[in-house]
Image (cartoon, rainbow, N blue to C red):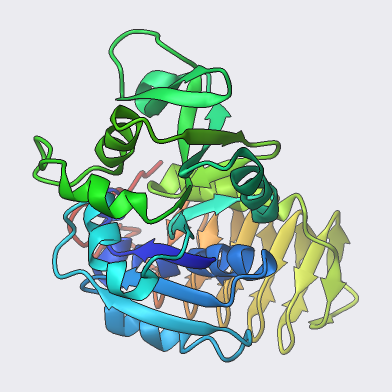
Length: 354
């Protein structure tokens, strides 16, 4: 079995951060989101992986490489325009050939073991398997109508209650998916929808089974989604202190500190993850915060936030919370008179002041 990981798309809901960085490479607990998906399929024993890339292909290829660091083979498949998940499957046929394959959305984090769904796929002798989860607000998602252990209908964001089983970004297909894609038409948004292709398989009488999540998953498509995924993963970290703390500093709860990081006269209240080569001085770093490599936090307080690499937060008078701070960002308080705000702000940004 092969794996197909989709890593294209524009990510407008994460602007302006994704103006300069592929959304799949944004960090959650100091690791690019895409790597969580890659590691999931590798753990399942899959060593032949295709990654569909778009306009950020060079950045993704540089970060991920050829797979040799994991002992697997990675092939890149270029999708010139984001024309839908089914279109990504269509252009990947030369790589996938006639083998069954797992399809994983590269901006999703799924905590369940993929091997469980592979086993269900084989045991049910399905032509496709769609992973589902119960949701309190199913109208926000594509939903599945179930009957006798199979999916009998898929409905995209229904305007009335039909089912509480929503589609997660993980699928398994056999070669019948390719002919199904050939027989569907673009949707109103001019994309080939994977739900339409699966519905075509159902129409033909092919068996579309489902697996149900036991743990949690998150589509990291918005800043709030990223912060929530960061929170979930931080709750699972194991304490590990590799940096240096002075005697005036205090650690409470689960905290990881990378090599080369210095903590000076500061309080870290976990769960917190601080990568290597950072300086935390006269600061408070509160729960559910991840600070990436080579950052400086000085005379400032921050919690429930993600700070990306090579950024600095200094002399900020109010506590920063629920924030997503990009790479190479400076947030610096003004100590001179008159005290003023001074911003250089990209398109689609949001700033709240008090």
